[in-house]
Amino acid sequence: MAIVNSWLICLVSVFSFVVRVEAATFCNATQACPEDKPCCSQYGECGTGQYCLNNCDVRYSFSHDSCMPVPICKSSSTKFKDYSSKLGNANTFLGNVSEADWLYTGDVLDYDDEESLILAMPKNSGGTVLSSTRAVWYGKVSARIKTSHLGGVVTGFILYSGAGDELDYEFVGADLETAQTNFYWESVLNYTNSANISTTDTFENYHTYELDWHEDYVTWSIDGVVGRTLYKNETYNATTQKYQYPQTPSKVDISIWPGGNSTNAPGTIAWSGGEINWDASDISNPGYYYAIVNEVNITCYDPPSDTKKNGTSAYVYTSSSEFLAKDIAITDDEVMMDSDEGSGLDPHKGATTSSTQKSSSSTATSSSKTSSDHSSSTKKSSKTSSTASSSSSSSSSSSSSSTATKNGDKVVSSVSSSVTSQTQTTSSVSGSASSSTSSMSGNNAGANVAANWRLTVLCVILGYVL
Image 1 (tube, rainbow, N blue to C red):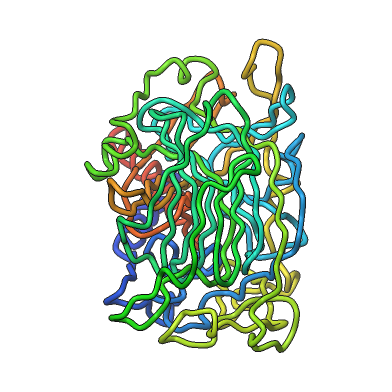
Image 2: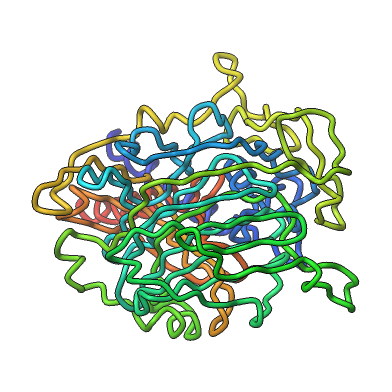
């Protein structure tokens, strides 16, 4: 009977693995999501749950209201001292903004010496993304950070919307005295949109990078000095008769990602400073590439004067054909789902009788542990998202807009000393932000595939033994 039960488990595991692999549904400009998987993730895959949050792509979802409403901007100042335990896990977050102001995917560590947060990128991983749970719809956002370094390693600080609007800073580790700035409107790739700002060593020094975003202009500043100004009237496109200017509510993302990963497009690898060296000294000590976040400040500006207002809690899109500022309304619609089966079409789908307001359990219950020293005198607690899927962003002028994404199951054992990556894949996805942002599956498909693959291997071993 035990043998039969084991084989039944094996067969179920294999079947589940095959079904999940075959069930992936993708979304893009020519194919919207189906009603049963209504939300198009930032990385072009359809699903429910987390697919419907964190910059769910309203353009390619089943309908404009498939994505969850976006929590409205709230001015804030965040110092990242001893902050890892306060972060939400983006892979389990269901929209309850009272639980967390910031989410993560990948690996984060408290850095006591500098009262900051480390975004770590262990060997062969896809990096780490720190994301705001609320969006900014015009405002001033500044981040005091140290970037990573060495060829192929990219650090990003961006604003990115569910309609593909983007404002960003990106830093390639091969050039530590240049901040690359860029903007996108609805993910349209325009190589003339990028511009560089000179600065001093971004790896050794903290700098405060600021985006001051208004309805009619935006400035990029470093340490209080404006390095670039873009006016909306400069972005008019006579063909579309539209201003191709970022104008929709955007989340804040800070990330580290492997632009030089060998699986990325050649243009992305070249732009990022060449193929990444996964055996560099950082991988030996402290055990990962890293960027450091010390502080983020957000000041919200008023929405456009003609904005439709039926509440004060959330931003919603009102059109399935256009995604401009005029198509945004402010409502009191729910921003939280009850389960990972939910979506904007039915936030309560999958709710249990015992809990009708299920949300992320990641802030207090995520594992926190002490890693070996980042410096000889410093100890940090570390967190690893169970399905670490991290990303990044649109490239600048020498490459296509792309995102390096890891889907799979990663185990980090004392992050700075021993990293085991299992079933990791890194790919390029065009048109998004660093996003560096996070590539997550509504039902955590990457982790499920990885887990079922391991079970399948066990089945084969079991069959051989029996």
